[in-house]
Every structure is written in C-alpha cells, then in structure tokens.
Image (cartoon, rainbow, N blue to C red):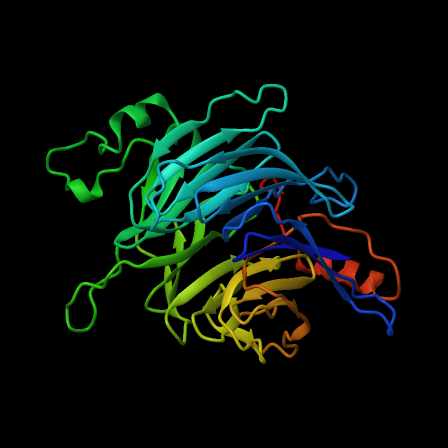
Length: 396
C-alpha cells in the first residue's frame, strides 16, 4: 500500500492510495478529499520526512500546505485519511505576484520560503499557540528552495541567483535579521559578488562562457539534495536552458557535471530517487526521465504523458506524479544499471492514472512504509532492500 497526498488549483488536499496487490476485479487506486477549507491554489505541500519512514515505528506524519494567497496551515495525518489542523498563519510579506516556493515540516516547526525571499520559521507548539514565528530574509527572484533531510541546512536558486547553501540556525540568528543580507566582511580585494552573506555556507559559481565567449544566464528553476541522510554537500539543479547540473560543495563552486536533459522549455522539477545514482527529471513538455547521476545518461523515459509533469514524489517502489493534464499517475521504477553506461533492460512505465476534477499542482509521498500482504509482498520487500543506498564503514 502506497499513499500520496496531492494539492490542486482549487485549494483541495486529496489522498491517493495505490494497492498493487488488489484483487483483479477491484481498482488499485482510490482517492479521497482530506481538506477543502481554502479556495486558493495549493502551491507547496510537505510531509515530515522522519515521521513514518520505518515499518517498525510509525508516528502520525506532520503535513504543511502553503496557498497562493499567502496563507498556510499545518496538520497531522491519521491512518484513516483524516487531516487534523494544528496551526495556520499568513505570510504578510508576500505580494500578489509572488508565491511560496518551498516548505519543510517537522513535528515541532515549519519552515517556509517565498519567491521574494521571505523566510519564516513557524513553531508548532500545541501547548502555546501564541509562540511567535521567527522571520528572516533571503535574496529575491527565487524559483526553488529546499531543506535538507536533517533540517540543518537549506538551499535555493533563481533568476540570476545561483545555487546557494545556508546554515539553518545561523539564517535565523538575530545578526542575520539585523544585517538584512549585508555581505560578510572580508578582504577589500574580494569582489562583492563573491562575498558570502552571514549564514551562507557556500555559493555556486556560474559555468564558463559559451563558444562565442558570452556569459550564460543564471536561471535555476529546480533543485534537490542528493542524499536522504546528514550528507548535504551533493546537490542537483535544473535550469531554464534544460541543463541538469550536479554540485559537490566540498570540491568546487562550479558544477562537477553539466548535462543537457530537458527537451522542451527547460527543467520543471528534479527529485532524487530512492535508488543510488537515480534522479527523476521533468521538463515543460511531456517528458519525464530517470537519469543516471554517474554520467547524466537517460536510463528511460515514461511514455503516454499528455501534460507537463509539475511535481514528482518518489517512494520505495513506485513513483507518483502530478501533471497539467489533470492526471495523477503511479509509475514503476527500476534502479540504474550496476555499472555506469550499461543498458537498462527494464523500463519504467505508467501503472495507473487517475483523472482529477481540478489540475493537481503538487504531490508528495506520506513517508510511511506500510507492510504489504499478498503475492507481491516478498517482491516489493526485496526491491526496497535492493534500492537502498550502501553506507560504508569508515573504520572497516
């Protein structure tokens, strides 16, 4: 059993359940509306990544949603497909033409960021609802913002705003709020554009000029961390020109790899898969690809899409997607070949698609690994173990 949450342009939050071992005469997908209390589009949706990721310890996941009018709400999600509202608030610094670009939630707090750089930490304390939020500011003209798995760092990028990595605690320190993004003091010979802001750990450097010697514009449209652990120095970013860039903040400011992946209109979204070296990428056309992070090759693409994929939600054995053709889809996934450059014999395909009455804007996995029963249980459990990343013993 897999459960995904979707938000749509009418402000609804729905659940999409996929049961691969359902009887032949029954539907493998079911949907239900969990929340319809806001008539504005859901622009961001997040689930606590550490809430229910174990089949042995399953807490009620914390869910947060941001809407196009600047309002936001936090919920808890029950196994019975019920959203219980915990707290709601409004981002007053967001203007009409701006939007939420990022959201991260845990049991005790919610982080949110808007396209004009309005950063907010909202405490979730059921005993004291009067706890004040902590506000901070980032550069404007942002397209995407991501929090790392352990919430110790976050990254952003945008229009002429290159990929940047920040320390979360320092970003909300009183010094940051007082300085209002004044660059850190340094050598007089150092260029102002290279000076890091207080709280900023690392900032990418633009790629080399093109063959004509012209500067290439910075248009970071999507980004993601490439590890679901405490490792935060590997990131991937998509650009408006259709490139996918891989960064290692320990080695260089420029990308360690730059691949042309997008076919139409640039990169729309990138998401790290559950398997090692696996990345999912969509563009503004009808393309959704699985990419090998070792060499940037396209392992396979999904056929039959009739709308641009606006959001991707990897889970241990299937992939959920939301697209502009009003369909939410469930895709099969297969890990990259053992050796880079080898052909992948098995290709991903669309397993199920569900037509939704309004256009879905975002989809997320609920982070809960539910034990499966039935003939597919053993196979699915083997797939989960095969796709898990190997962690080597430093002392071994």
